[in-house]
Image (cartoon, rainbow, N blue to C red; front, side, top):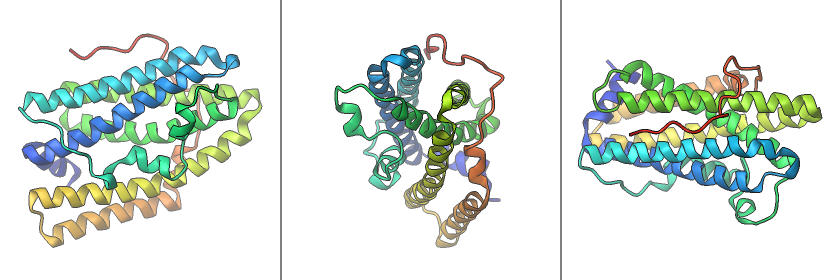
Length: 259
């Protein structure tokens, strides 16, 4: 029977598919770590209280990258080059979502609208990350090899999402509500397209590694398109809603280590 659990289990059980999965994940997390470190360094004077939280966000992302590399080493594997069509983070940037890397490389302070863009982009992508990690935690929390890593990353992603909600609500109360909603909507609609395309690409690469039949690959592609259809019709709205989280000041302390 084809299910999310059986699909992940198949990827996990094969060295080459696991190698690709961890390489893609590690690359995206490391990229997020760099982006957050640069944003923390460029925060405008009036938002300096955000800098430690952004730094913590980046430290968490760097930690996640190290965790995926550690999972590879544990199985005696090395990372592989990430196929361009699976690079979710860079494809989002090419679609103009979030702060451009050229902007982050410049030594010019960000503006409050830049912070709105950053937090809105993060709120949308952290929603996706939190949902994906919750799915993995549901199925593999007790797995002897990946269970601890999955649980730690899932908890971090929940913290990141809570932080985005809280800070965006603070900025909305300060008069940026319309800009936030406009930016969130644009980010969400772009993200669901990118997620569909990256998902199709990842499954195509996995199918070649695992020798899936054309029928199975077609069925998986149909499922991905069905998810996109739902998200385009209504599901994207979950990515733009803002509510005060139960977990307040979620990034107010140091990042937890993974030994």
